[in-house]
Length: 316
Length: 259
Image 1: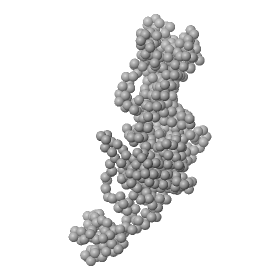
Image 2: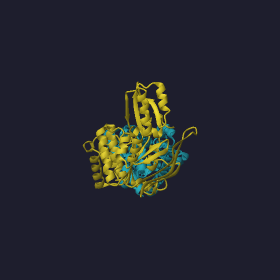
Image 3: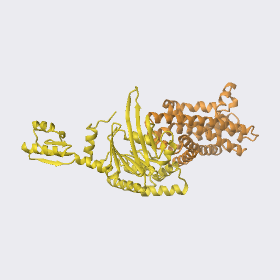
Image 4: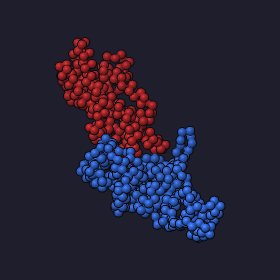
């Protein structure tokens, strides 16, 4: 059964002056119960917009989103009961209160009272590694510690579905490692998780399936294994001191995706066909280029192939 | 019903806890002893010792209203600026009930204000207040505080829907003090002004609290209490509806987290 059903979801923002920007353009996605689903995309791709609509804090322009069968617009009260949310960044806590008081407030907001609330707060503080700092004001916490607190807040009610929007931003490597272990535990408990991230390795390591989103559209939804095969279908050849006429010949060869400089003297040729890689190697050797190496790109580079190279550009 | 109870209780407990940890929550208290000194001096100088008890009610209610203005102006904006509004709206509690609950907690500031006013009147002027009708006094004080929280909920909705209104926030104090008869009993106003002041819950609450201090019988106490509650309930209904409308619009426009 589906924990999340997203059908033809569109979201249009209207700016001052009447200009419109389409953040989501007909997203269709199903996440089954107990699945950990990674959502990858550059800034402005629509990841956070999607999380906000699922969380009921943003209304869709059209399309539907159901969380455990409940519509986020017409049945938002039921959705809120079954959803845990961790928005990214270090904002969101009451800085003058202690970590324990913050969590007690949120546990109360989700209907926990008395001894049950105290027990849950203790469990969560222990679980996110903040037990030793429980009585300190959150204002004195580092960004990573605040992120841990947000994570604990998202878990106060033992949610059926957990939305994690860039959960490890600002965490140090040890905390990020602990976070991954926690996601593994939650998966074991049957919690459905939708996690947005920029970190390809994190998405591949934690997710049952990964979706790539760009400019408001889902580019693909596959298992990390399939994405891994996709990775291996791309290859790259790095060569030193390639003259311009040869670079132009390489770029015109079939199966060559791109030819670009990656260092002062290094040219990188990327292909999507093993035969093309062999042809490129042959061409380089015949031209007398001896400084040649061959490798496969990482997930990030494949991702860049799929969504295009827009550098630091953020979609409007 | 559950979201309402969750919101109210969470807001009340949160605000009382928050107030124990932030000194600036008590800024509204600063004026209470000074106002007592000024009002009591004027009353004693003019030989109206019968009005001396009134001078501890005025600073208490002025503190209550100042706190209402202060908290209603800041509460939602602060949550919005600090990224808390979205998680609050995404939680199962009722947001208007949370705001009202928090403002009810903030109204507890009237207790130390009353103690300060009584203390100043007693210690510095030798005038110790006697509450001749304690039940009426407590009921009047509680309903007035609740209606102030309700009115502050309406103001908080107004400030968030029309941020420009916050510019005039501080200028709302003096007209309210005068119109509600906190400083001067409404009965001493010209007739047309008295009619206007009767629209304000605070005029009913202030009169009732003053009458509860006097030795004579309190007339129509139940009706006057009902007026305080009714006017407070109307303000709460307006505030809740406005907040719900604001949240709906912000969710539609995507401006919930935008300051």
